[in-house]
Image 1 (cartoon, rainbow, N blue to C red):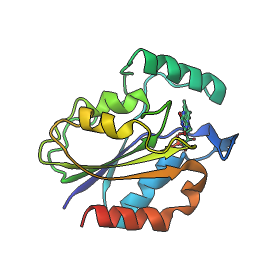
Image 2: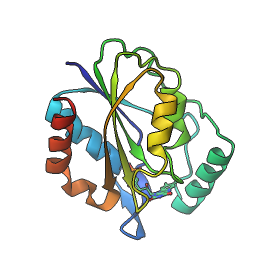
Image 3: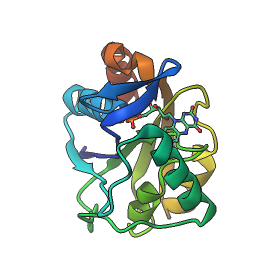
Image 4: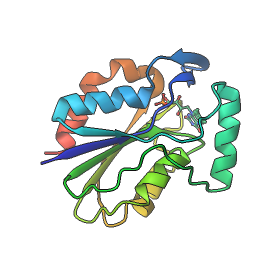
Length: 171
Ligand SMILES: Cc1cc2nc3c(=O)[nH]c(=O)nc-3n(C[C@H](O)[C@H](O)[C@H](O)COP(=O)(O)O)c2cc1C
């Protein structure tokens, strides 16, 4: 079984446990690392050409506009071919109810037939939100596997839980 983790994560200012904190590594980035270590996987980071503002409050407004416009931001690098993988793990935060628009830029250009997609959403209270629906719509042809919501503040302490979840997902 070959596994791939596709993740998006915001470093720097983010909302954690009810206040704005500065993160050296984003929560979804930590979780992507735990999955990689637990089951052995390649990793691909989704990142936008145009950076979001460093200020959390400005960033949430930028993201709100993108959501409203159903934007598909340009990426620094595109993952073009997932034919060599059996399991694709998607790991990204909940931004206004679903994943950041950049995640969909990437997912919508891939062919998922014959692949199983598992996904993790980091959040500050909204859980999986509307992500499950969007995964079904964006990952064309995929078999949808397991999902996990991780509250961002607990991400640094969630390695054991995430590793067990990932191992079970690929059983
Ligand atoms: C633009 C933006 C919008 C967000 N919207 C939500 C939201 O609607 N619901 C929620 O629970 N958390 C929301 N959050 C908080 C993030 O989901 C949470 O901090 C998450 O752990 C961040 O993961 P990351 O560090 O990997 O980026 C938002 C954060 C940002 C930056």
